[in-house]
Length: 208
Image (cartoon, rainbow, N blue to C red; front, side, top):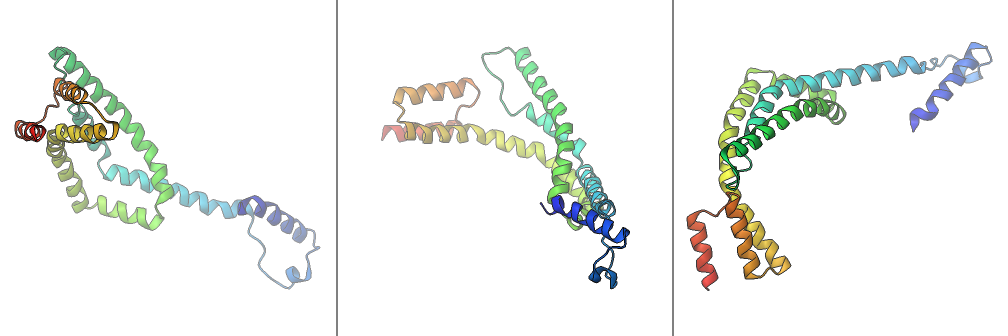
């Protein structure tokens, strides 16, 4: 809002000074108001510098390698569907990987203005300095190496997480025993059956 009325005020003052009809306080020697265009230039320069730093930050975070890793991992998020053939499951996996690979470059490009808007120049400079350093690059490389192993752990936990979520949901919605069993069967057909030990413990719990 300040910028909306500052421009006409500065323009009016400049016109008054140019015609020699300046008020007494202006003739006594205060500095002449800075022209609007000149004042805006540093702001544009800083915005451009912050955007450039944001892009360097994303590049230093090994965005391309991260994108490739995430694209590869996306194909393993959903386990193979037992009702589909091996070729059909492979086609689904390839489609997911390709979709993710196409999305991430656009996502990273869209992230740069957000970082430029949120972080200060000092913060962006510090981030770039760190992630472009040997330690920062090593951190990113090892994080990418860890990602597939973390993905495997998360995938192994997914059946229990989904079953626990269904337990909570059924308590809230009052599922019947038959409805709950149907949900378990659907999860099992999707490759999300409970591990044997957990399944056995759950069956014993039903017996009580």
